[in-house]
Length: 435
Ligand code: XUL
Ligand code: CO
Image (cartoon, rainbow, N blue to C red; front, side, top):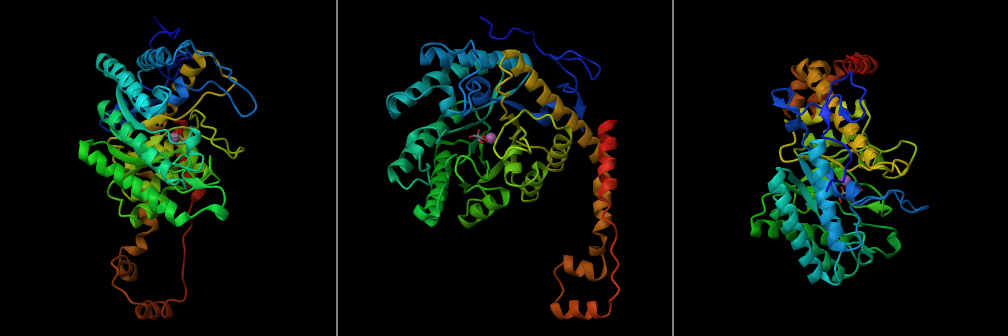
């Protein structure tokens, strides 16, 4: 049985007008010495692709998908079949999942875990048959009402224990599926008001849960990279994992910084008042750029709209950071993106993925050219060249005192600065994109 009424999507080149063809993503085309598919490592998100049907706070579902059946196990299996057909037809090599995306909860934790065993066996068979792999798994510790006050940061110790049990099982399932990473997005790890919140205990508990998770992963020999996904708000007013720098401070305080990298999501960056590139850059210079949730927000809306990424400028600068990082290693580009409520056909889903994949493929090619031509590197190196000799070199080498700096400044009253040439650089980037 087939769920999608289209053939395998092919690369037709930039002159093609076929909406169901790639114009930029040519998976085997070599860029900077390796095929595009190895740079990009695209992943399908199980939740937005197979389990999201267009409802919003003001209205119900607009998408009726043929993989939704009357019975929970039949639906879960049909989702696997539909998902693998979709990934094969789009040439997407990886998927990402939350435990609860795969199958809904049973009557208690024991039954839920048994259901997860059944469905993960089924997924494993499909993985073996198709060669499609798992980029990362995670636990959904935010939807169920037990997580009303948080999971690891709940005021209720019973909830902490339940979350730990759920995460333990999610790590086991991720290991079973050969997941290359495991993600922690603190869905409700934050607070609404300080009037009822012990932030110190909540943060201590949060760190302790992460440590227990890492210890358990080591104990069972799970080698995947642990990732934290920062987000500043939504669902709680204040999320503890606000942005990359906040998470870095937290990890360092609790001595967890060697064990975690970051999963950077474009729309989370903009919610934090940063650009996507800023978050990638700060992660990169701190050696914690792990993986990417590829999407985009809407600058006029203050929430996480999770739109498919079509902004070529942002994709270019994101891929520039990825290239400077030497790639994403075990990470990849997961489309944590959903089609708009009004785009309710199955074909819209395919077109959205094609648009996202083409955008990042073009971004990769432009960024590679910028990198090869050392456009920004040479400008930046020259801009900071005062630190290569004289007093600047002493500052860089940390071999100077306040007294010596004062003496230097006293003898150097006429300071000259040079233009930052922002508009020139922006126009050069545009030229690279136009080409
Ligand atoms: C929520 C979000 C999640 C994480 C995984 O904003 O991005 O889907 O990526 O839990
Ligand atoms: Co995400």
